Image (cartoon, rainbow, N blue to C red):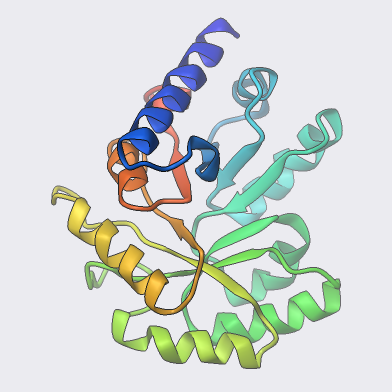
Length: 220
């Protein structure tokens, strides 16, 4: 319990320091604890320490463990940060408070219908393939205006952009590009930065950082 609280305090302090250096308010940055692959017993200490935003990669995994945890502690916000299959759109619209991986036309159409049926819409981010990497999900930078327009036509309100910079490269230019793209399209939110680079992301405009290892420790 104390270890989880110490890790959380350390990350929160680092976010506050980075925000201060960028003349931003730490309260404008949402810390998402990436709980994918971690079971309920590993998650509860962070909840007890005060963490309320958590990120999952898969709809099935989240559906299996989070309803019980949310009954134990009301007020938890669940973020889908992994790729979403169109046939899981309806379940995702009901389960998640935010979806960070809207990235293609078929998913926009599926989510538009799912949100209408559910009578609710999670906070939505378009994932941008910021480094033009074949192996990664995300909409190409050139296709972003069209996808945003299609989302509006489907009745969806996109609030921000998400990106994962190429591994092993300096992330700052990619964070700066995402910030510029969000500004250009009038989107207030930027989901960027993970355990190794979240301080840089905060200094370059991140409103949501997705941190796993720094909060849960290294995986076995």
